[in-house]
Length: 316
Ligand SMILES: Nc1ncnc2c1ncn2[C@@H]1O[C@H](COP(=O)(O)OP(=O)(O)OP(=O)(O)O)[C@@H](O)[C@H]1O
Ligand SMILES: [Mg+2]
Image (tube, rainbow, N blue to C red; front, top):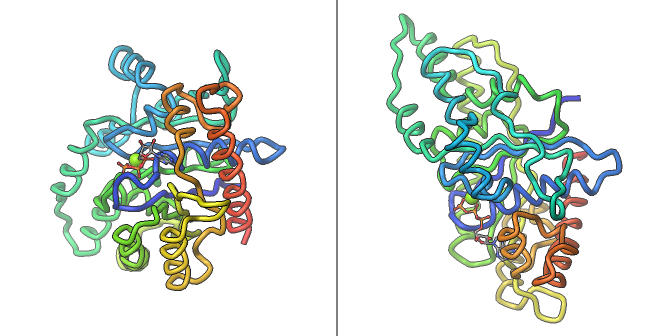
């Protein structure tokens, strides 16, 4: 069975795209007895997911000192018209489960800070074709770089989670093109929820555009729309076991605007996530996080509930 491919999308910064990519990735693996295989792909030049998964020092050592390949090399191979093997870019088992142990079934394809330049170069890149169809085909080539890279390894994984940067430039469009699902992480403040309708309508436009380009150019691409799985609220403050009233109001209003899309479960604001990050772990490793055991355990419980909901939505 081919992998479920999920993009984490919200062009508002700091809502938890990277944190959730990491925690849903590990959570999907831990929550299922058959221990599915998960690949995380970091598409953001900020490299936050790569740092969270590997630890900053380990990332610097691997990528800058030892020259390990990154997503940048995948895009460069497109510009240079060369082949690159996706499995050479993937780093296996980067995430610490407890001191000196790693999670076995979660891998990462790391990002690189030079990816900012890739977005600009992709936008500038124009190949002139002899027909309009051929030029449309070239435009499709620019958004199917990640799609092609994933095709090589798709059968090795059950879930592939793509952490997008906070914009909708060509790298994000590549992620969307490659995905069959997307999730919108959000925080319960007014301004960040206004954007949700915009994200949904932009994503619908992208799906339509891609399909039109494929049929017009005659490109042989097996494209499926990326369907929205839902909106996950993060950094929710609780009062007596429920979201505090201002947060609850915001969540309810988004829920009434986007029927059946808001996850029933949410993630609380708490230091478990940052303490875990400082120790290169996830909150699931709360036993190894004495400074914030209680809080990390609570966030882990809430995340497990979100994973259950996510699985139900994926299975339809
Ligand atoms: N539930 C939470 N409780 C406390 N802190 C959190 C929580 N979720 C995320 N954070 C913190 O908030 C910050 C932003 O989170 P994260 O980097 O995951 O957001 P992002 O959407 O990926 O940001 P960007 O748009 O810059 O890529 C991080 O410092 C992270 O540790
Ligand atoms: Mg991020």
